[in-house]
Length: 96
Image (cartoon, rainbow, N blue to C red; front, side):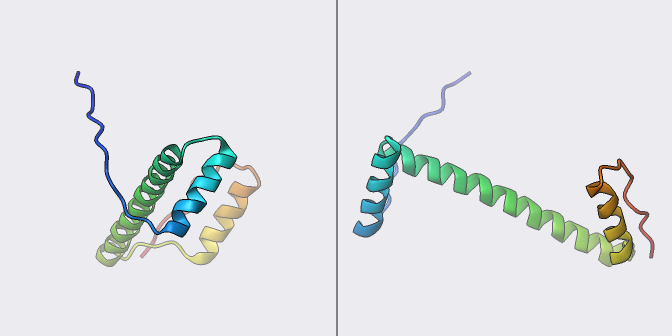
């Protein structure tokens, strides 16, 4: 198994942001480098989840366009109320 190669990447940030990152890093007792890596990692993970949700929504919309199957707002709300109350219930049946 090979070890991934880590390579430096330069980014340009304005002096104000650079100073803010430095102040925050000092307050957290971390380096600015650590803080920026953490911020980028969190951003990428959040955006990957957002993109996955967007793709799921597109697939659901395409499936609805093809089949016409759906759940009414009332049925969905009633199901969610039961889930919120702690019941382990199956989702409502889809219909055309």
